[in-house]
Length: 373
Image (cartoon, rainbow, N blue to C red; front, side, top):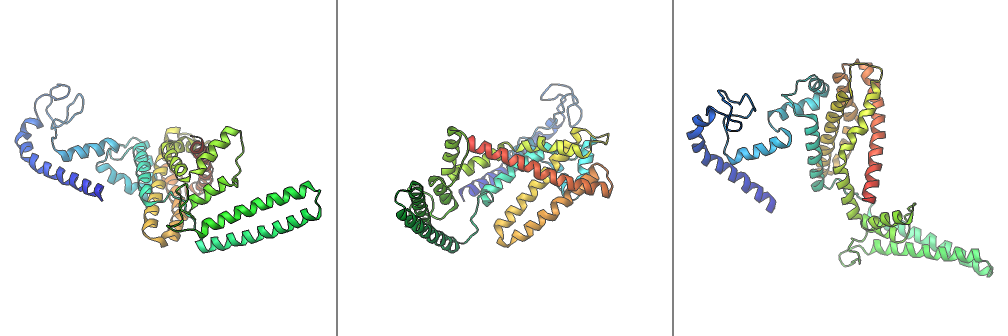
């Protein structure tokens, strides 16, 4: 709430400053519009822009313009964004083709809009909770399952102890009984954690009983998570898994920092689709990938926000991905590379398979970096 009030105060202050400075700007407008020489490089000027360095001859002094310059510096946020986004949604092929052909002054740079969209997406996710894993099984069902597992483990323990008592000299049966006894203890602690959910049931590690964080931490503590590798690797991974919130934060930060890896991972796969066709360069494929990734990120962001607002949006969101992603890829391929319907269709199918493979590689790299970083 305080941050919203601060933002509102900043905007109000900017508007007041704009009104107060308007009279002063008007007073100096004639002198600043065409001062005769550029205020930056000193070259003679006669129009709105310096012919040498390109700086406007009219220099703004309003606080509101300072915010405009901030947004413009991030991603050239001006009228071009309103020409870029509609084309990205309904005619991505034309947008990609025109950028490659050099018609760039009217559109936002593909790299700029990609980086800004990634930043905005993770900013939205931090408020919507889209990146936080959820346990979908209701708590009563999990408690019932834990009781069933405990009953089965106790029955197996009884059988193991009976077999061990019938053969007192058998070391193997004695080991089996001890292992089964430890397993019963694991199920008992799990059931206690689930049935003890509530504000009065505090854990020494501060985790909420019955939450996914508590279940993961208990699984690592009870050695139910098997990690292979050398001792340093195993200990580092288990240390992260014992603190699931920290691990989730690390994975989110790693995904954000290394999201650019999706670009070099994707470009070779797109190039494979046009291996025998001349006239297309890796730069063309890079522009295609950047605009395509931006569109997919915007789709993920929209479905995430709508899913957080309306719990019944899950089915519609799944349909949006199932039909929207292939349709967008098809339209972009057909328009950007001027393909026929058939050529665009079979390339879309292959591109979807390539995307799954590239995304799998990216996620594996993110998990490895998150666990070891």
